[in-house]
Length: 266
Image: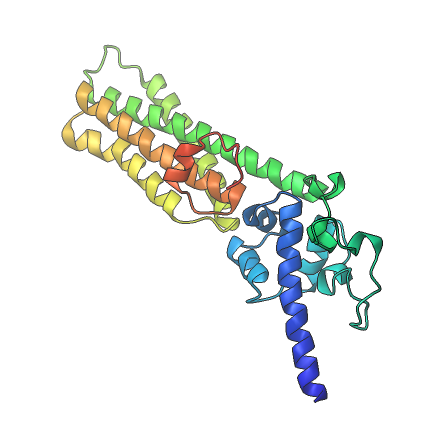
């Protein structure tokens, strides 16, 4: 009987933890993706915690308690039960209101409970790194598209007399520098658990900027078409990176189309 009671108590604690995690997250106005980013875990892990399919470890429990401005005990056993499992005496706030509701159901959320939690110093540093990666990725991709198409067009044009070798050398140096910068950004994105989908889009615009114009001939219509398609592939790559770093989610084009500036939580 004692063993059965222990199992029932453990199951009750797990179910209560799942509900309290979901309740406190919603009270802070946070999405599962935002909680996942702050803890450095996947959004699927947070979803499993809130559905009771798994439970966070002690380290993540401490981070969750700090994020929700409560203690670990309040997450595990709640504030409506005593440590020994016996219910506490009814408090004035737990009394029924005029509509017959009790506890948190009958209380209006306070300003402290409804406000969003500000980022911690470590989180602020991570957000700054993510933003630097995003800005650098946008700049180097745009620069590489322009530089590669310029090199292809110069290679197919009639050589001026005298041939300006210094200009081509400067272009190649710029391409190498931008490529190195993009590799660093891609490495950071991969270390943050990024999807290889972004690399597939990058491979697409690289081929459109280098191989396709050479194969079809660097005429003006070909270069214009390759530039348009390259920009489209680079845009898809950047949206994939941005959605992963900011929302810990795979890029959803339809949802992104309805909120291109990211004003709503995703």
